[in-house]
Image 1 (cartoon, one colour):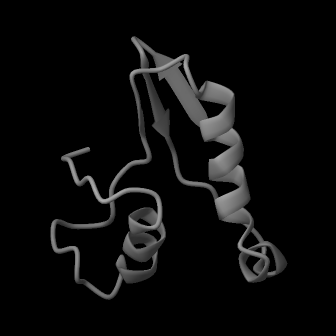
Image 2: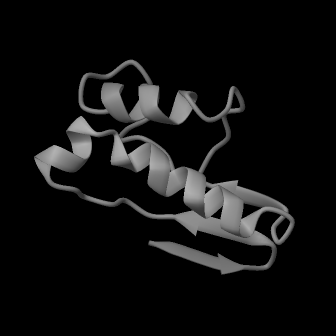
Length: 76
């Protein structure tokens, strides 16, 4: 789910079934969101990972996923 306002879109968590994860559907969804909002926003906030430790096991996969989109890190 994405909420937009004030030139910023906020991305929220999305859960998928195991087949969607195997197909890496999350990347396609994020790409579609970015294409839709291109030129309409100042920036897109994809949210953070659990906790403040980017190396923790709970957020390791999510952190890797988000690093695939940008090298910029900000407080969400």
